[in-house]
Image 1: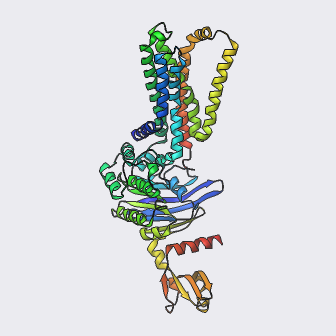
Image 2: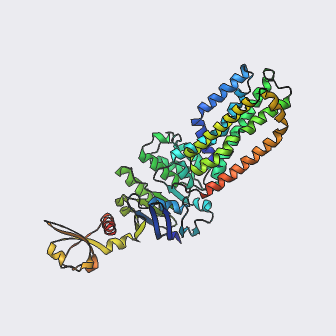
Image 3: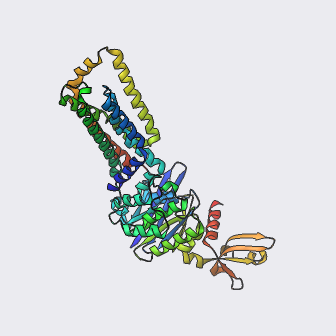
Length: 210
Length: 281
């Protein structure tokens, strides 16, 4: 699987300069001025969807077909994409964590544990998009998979809008959910693992180059 | 041992069926798969590699069933697809590093030598290479990991005649080792005629024939005669005829032609065109 990871590394280095720029920009804004957690959450969320973009590049260049002729199992081909996503989410989260620790006084975290828990929550939340979109993109191709991607974004936006509509005191509401965080996090990790298994199953039956 | 054994291979798609294909490629030989666009050549190669799942039949690669740990089998198989399939931003040096992490028997030295021999620039992005260079890069990868079998899908299409000749020589050289074999598909029949030991004709998903090239060329010929001379021949001796005001030309079975008539050698292309037309009628 080493060859697949090296290939994705080259692709990232070439195609994702803009992504890196956005990351640096957002983290820099968070570092120097803003007391806004969204600025640091976005790069972590973006990291989660990069494997889907990589899949789209693979399809366009017909690497998907060529790769089917190379000595990789289909599980390895799928797993490489999940690994790349996981690595990017982890690295981005660590960078964000370091930035927040250095500039903790700018944010409203009371303790280091609270800060770490917040980054962990962002890290876990970044699993939502790949968990849902990867199996669809692998089964139906990234063009059709993109529809699911937009549906998920619309669902999240709708959920947030509903939450804002239904209560005036969102911070207190969120505090009341804090106790459920371990369950939510565990649930998302389990779903991510199931998503990987489902993707492998879909890809095993896929007709490559049909 | 046979490099490739295909028996009763069938695969259906809406509007197309690859129908009951059986062919054998002995080790050390080159088999040319001739067919027009859409005949099923690429489908056959993808089925061999288990990229497409067959409906029925069996495929053995180097003596092993292709559904039995295909990942391991692919270590011994070099593949060139009709589109090379290498991402645009990668250069030949990076492709080498990727393949070094892919094949157990990857030979960096041989890859470098092949790049130099085929004049492929190692630092130029794939998107900036000509179609010929792209195919040559695919070929360089296919021959640099100790492959025992090459599966080549239209590797010479889009190449200029000089490069095609160079590539064809390379394939001939590859099979000097009797443990190495090639299945090559193309609709440029002249290349296959020059290169192959065996020829298979594929038309609309059906295998019209699979035979040793020399047997085919020895069995059939072309005669030029008058219309009257042609009409005197046994009907089964004539496969195809073309009559014009200047005389008659016919593809014939050599053994059924009287010695008084001169038989010219037939080309595989003429034979293929004839068989396809017969099938269409």
